[in-house]
Image 1 (tube, rainbow, N blue to C red):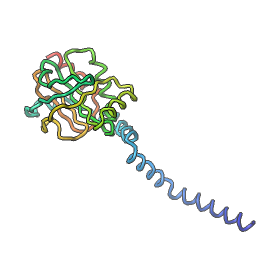
Image 2: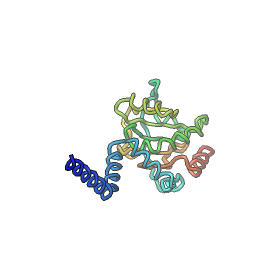
Image 3: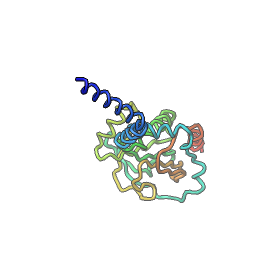
Image 4: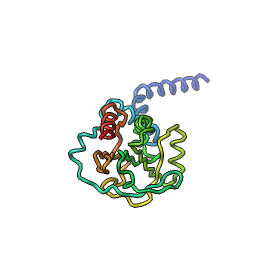
Amino acid sequence: MTDNNNGQSINKKNRKRFIRKHGFSILMGLIIVTLFVSPEAKSWTIRQLMRTGLYNVNIEKDMTTLPQMDTGFDFEDEKGNIQNTSSLKGKVVFINFWASWCPPCRAEFPSIETLYSKFKNDNNIFFLMINEDDDRAAGRDYLQNKGYITPMFKTRSVVPANIYNGTLPTTLVLDKKGKVVFRHEGFANYASDDFISQINKLIKE
């Protein structure tokens, strides 16, 4: 029994020594695995980076550099109504291509929800949130589970590659004439005071 006790004591000491020596590496490994496996964990991490302000975006910087682009495509709302983006001329249009499985999309969605909440009653702006999930229900369930009220749409024709090439998320802003004044690939913060102010300026033009 004494030998068994000594053996158990030695094993415990070895385990503690191993944990002390390699604990940080084990922890970092678990974090990396979690980030790799969990979209929610990835999006949370990205959201913390966004809070630094490094991912704020600026419409006015893009307005003078973007070439004119073809922005025409058909889209469908949740009720099955189909229309073309050309019918939105006269409004500022915020377009976002997203999917529920996309961590950067999840990360920036709260900022878009904030932006939408500020302008949802303004008829001079239209939020065209294009869901790219293969299953429409997946996108709808994501919005409902998060309590988001931003509307969801699906494309019903080919989208010009110069505005969307498959990169998620991709975001554009069209002015009232239908001209692209902002285009961004990747996640960003759309709830900054500067961005909201620039949207307001476009609405008033």
